[in-house]
Length: 237
Image (cartoon, rainbow, N blue to C red; front, side):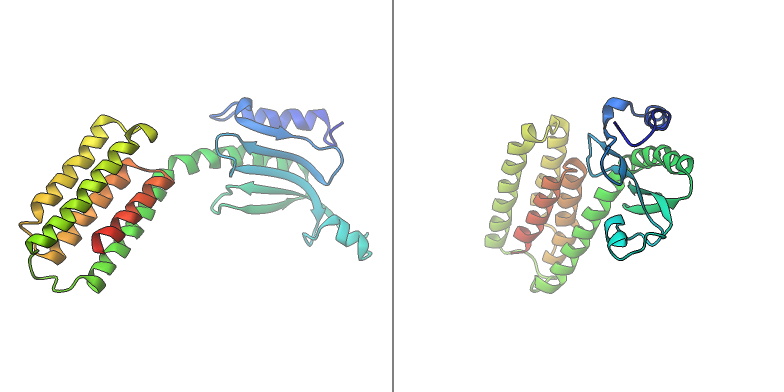
């Protein structure tokens, strides 16, 4: 039998059901033999979790407090929320159970907000890669004001062709639409033609960064970011 009363469990379930999600979106446990009263995980993204437990005011584990003779320490209710209001992990203590379970509603809201804004986070990571790419250009490209020799143009064109093949191979694996694939191809083709026009430093900073940005807009997964990082390394090497 769960340690929580049925009325409290019902309130928790109601909070989970009242937002944009339904109960089936969550893995919910109500333990009966530990200081943990409830654990909730968002099935689609299990990094999002909520824990309701009992602890002591100084946040030390119950068992250690008993061992050290702190039996008179004040027991409080704690919620551990991922994500929290402004951090990915937040721990809060509460004097009353009602205040603690009300946090379930806020946690569900924070999940929705975090998912909505995840695209901006991915873009920030891509911008970081672009910034690093620009820095490497300044450090590693000799004679940036000179133009590419024929052998240099051929070498970069080969790298761009290999990139195009790699993107085509990922089209079905990562569910890339034909329109998105065409967008990447257009950016690669434009970069090839720009080899004849721009000095080395300008080409890398304009065309190279453009390729990274376009691919980043299409491939928003971890694998996509790895491809972008690989592009940056190969173009400069």
